[in-house]
Amino acid sequence: MRVIPVGDPQDPLLRDYRDLTDIALRRVLEPEGGLYIAESAKVIARALAAGHRPRSVLVQAKWLADVEPLLTDDTPVFVVAPEIAEALTGYAVHRGALAAMHRPPLPSVADIVADARLVVVLEDMVDHTNVGAIFRAAAGLGADAVLVTPRCADPLYRRSVRVSMGTVFQVPWTRLPDWGQARDILHAADLHIAALALADGAVPLDEFAAAAHERVAVVFGAEGDGLTSRALEAADSIVTIPMAGGVDSLNVAAASAVALWALRR
Image (cartoon, rainbow, N blue to C red; front, side, top):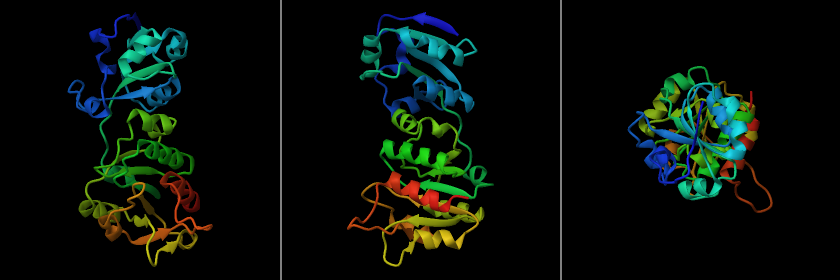
């Protein structure tokens, strides 16, 4: 790796880290496909293990030793003072290292679900914390893949990656088309679509799990709004988690963990 000390937050070398929103990163034309930011040595290591390529690394001097074992090519490593890192990013970089990573091309839905028996579908979920937490649950509880709808938050957004503890790099994922096409794709893969929702006549989760469908795609909606009518119409079953104590539902990340545990293989 090439270690390059940088003392000016306006240095053009640091442009990938300067005041860029996630949307701006995805619109970077060089390299094609855009970038995402991986934060902390642990997350960078998981991204590299998944085959993702870094364009550069930004690190504070005291964290350089944590980054050195990870990089075996000539990736530029920009070493900056803490105040430079904060001026660049707009927040205190407590985890020491950031990497501007090339976005890998997304695989097709058909390839992702070809051999999957338990698939998570996230519909229009805009909270990056929930997206990251659900990826962590998917990884820890044995889901084979995650599919996200066109309006769902980006799993590679920095906060999603951090909350997931880097598991967004180990669970295969891609984006679904709109439900008109998505339903046909999932059914072509023999996946039973189970929408998790509060609805009259919904099947309790334990009963649905006991039915032991061979292949299931379980669909979760945004916090508050829940699933759209199109998602519910596309579902083969509507499933609910029975609640007590006057509570009608769980946070969607908690609900995903409960559902995935019940449906684990």
